[in-house]
Image (cartoon, rainbow, N blue to C red; front, side):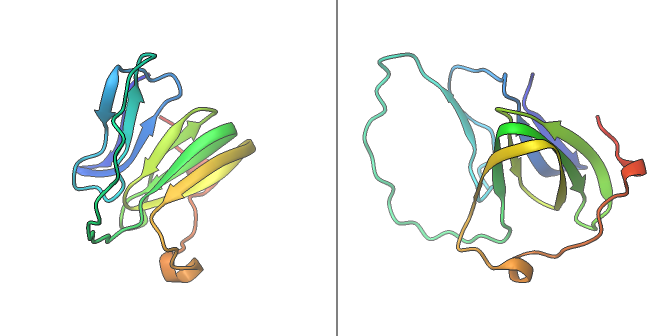
Amino acid sequence: MAIEFIRDHDLILAIIIPHDHQADGINFITPENFSQQLAYMHHPVGKIIQPHVHRPLKREVSYTQEVLVIKRGKLRVDFYNPDQTYLLSRILGPGDTILLALAGHGFEVLEEIEMIEIKQGPYGGGDGDKIRFEPVSADKIVLK
């Protein structure tokens, strides 16, 4: 399957890398202006990645972006535009990765799940970091 960009007009809400995606070399998937950079890498045995350290670099982060890596189970992800209007949903399974970039998102666990979440820190704490709103009703779910 191909990498999928979930959009609301020109706004990238999320990027899904399916478990069976393949490409050679280093492929950066996110735009350069994203505060969370996501790349897919595939190298042959013996490839040397030169040792390095990253220089201190001040960055300004306006929105928390998070990456979920699904280890086991199934998760439905519901996408909302910046006005908190429901748009559509996707189901993720083992090995799938998603970058939640902008706007809103909600989840329903469809099968017991284990996943890894990666996001910028430090965490702002519950309501200091999030604006919570009512989820879409089950009869309005649109899976594409």
